[in-house]
Length: 72
Figure 1 (tube, helix red, strand yellow):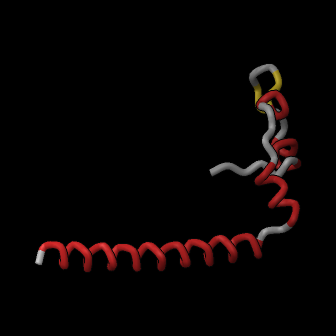
Figure 2 (cartoon, helix red, strand yellow):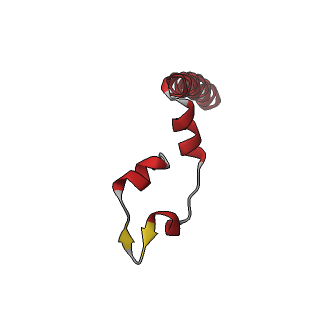
Figure 3 (cartoon, one colour):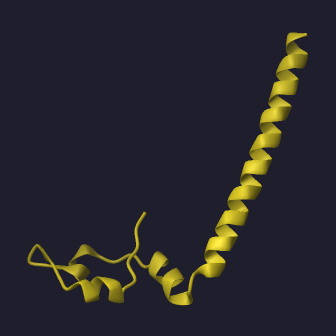
């Protein structure tokens, strides 16, 4: 009886996991379809801190937005 309950529980968890992955994939696809090419490139760009910081002071806001820097 314990093995059967464990098996049922594992099957339920596996089904939930598959559904969650499908939801995540759909969310990612929708997000990427709304992003412009410039935004996608900005997400992939890894800038060195010296690109936007000079003498320990953050440069102009326009410089930061020029590179479409976005972090999580």
